[in-house]
Length: 181
Image 1 (cartoon, rainbow, N blue to C red):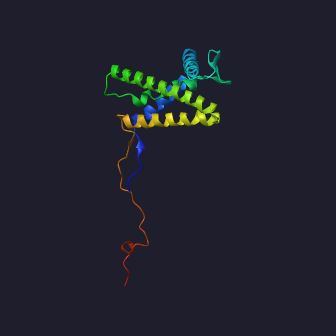
Image 2: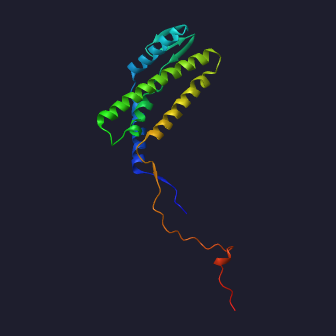
Image 3: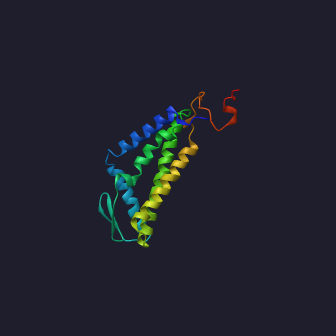
């Protein structure tokens, strides 16, 4: 019988770093990033013909629906959290930094599209929880699939199999003791 796979030490370390970085991301207010995200959505919504108005540095009113941009709305925890998972130890620092910037730029673009799609769906009559949550789930799922498929590290390994003594099956004829005379 083959043993069940277990996480490699490298994978466990990368997961721990992911948790730490995602947690650290939430320890900051990211005021400028929240303002920038709200400004982009304000501009795009206005360009799409929606009534859009700023209420505060992180809150906009779109078609009578106030939206406050929190840290989670910026995807900063996702962008920082996946860095240990996409870091290639066999590549140079410059290549890894270029990959990180490209990934963060791509995720920011996806986030803008997600928020704007949620706005449109909401104003067409969708429930906000679904209009916001479904695209969010799709992006997170697609991100983790992309991370998994492009990783250059091994996640699981099988421990060395050891000879396991199992009790004899009493129903198997070959395991029964020979009849005595």
